[in-house]
Every structure is written in C-alpha cells, then in structure tokens.
Length: 188
Image 1 (cartoon, rainbow, N blue to C red):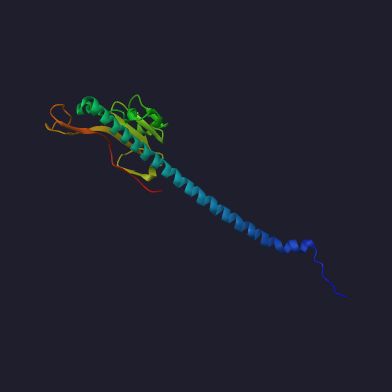
Image 2 (image 1 turned 90 degrees about the vertical axis):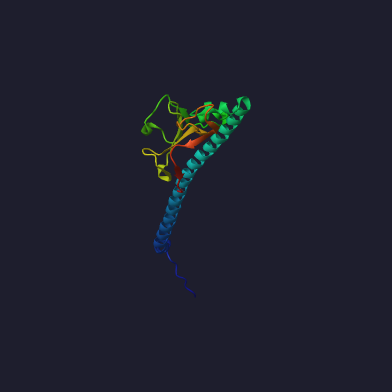
C-alpha cells in the first residue's frame, strides 16, 4: 500500500503568503515608477505645447504682416506701409486663425496681473505681449513675470538721424514684428 501525504490547504497558503506579498510589492513599485515617468513626460509635453503654440502664432503673424504689406504696396505704394507702425499685428490675422487666448487691453496693465498662456495687445505703446506660463523654460532679459513682447516697427534708413521715420526724407524699407527683448526657449 502506498501512502500519500495530504497537505491541508491552509498550510499551502501560509507558505505562499510571503511570496505573494513580495510580488505585490514589486508590482506596486513598477506601477509607481510608471506613474512618475508618465507624469514627468506629460509635464514636458505641456511645456513643449506652449512653446510650439507661441512659435506657431508668431509665424502666422509674420505671414499675415507680409500679406498686409504686399496689399498696401499694391494699393498705394510703399508709403501706405508707414501706417502699420505700432499697429496691432493680430488685426492682420484671418479671424479663423485668431488665437482663442487673445485679449486687447484698454491701457497699460501691470505684468503681474496678466494671466499666463494669453496674448495681449496694449494699444498705447503698440505692444503685443504673450504671458508665458512655464517661465522656467524661457530665457529673457525682461524683468518680472515671464513674458515676450513684440512691436510692429518700420525698417527705414534714417537720413536725417532724428530717430523716427519721416516720409519724403527717409527711405522706407518695410515693417516687421520685432521682439522688444531677446528671448530663447529652453528644452524641458
């Protein structure tokens, strides 16, 4: 007669219990690593998305300004371009391309009161402002909250040296949207 030992089910569970806890700990640690990695990557993508959005809007504005310059030159010559100095570049965008995060201001507003991730136009000085949300990834000389400022400025030869364009005296070369302070996006 052959005898087989019967091991009660509870004895097997006690032997496997430490093994199961170790497996659960390993699974928990792997899930935690995945969550931290994914959260970091999502944060980086958010920063890149803001940078890309700003670069796209700036590119669209340059194109719209170029089209407006050509239209004015064709209608009335180069002198029609002079009226574009310090104008709102957003006015030249096709309404379908207008950023949803754009607002025209009534007057100067302290930079601290500007909402991040928004474009603003300040009409008294003719300055287009983008208030950056992820300022740690923007390098600029502009003090205060992180932002980029642009202005439409005439390109001309200042024949009389007085620092501003004089029709009939100075040679007008065009108009362009220029950054008032140098800036550079940093990689996340």
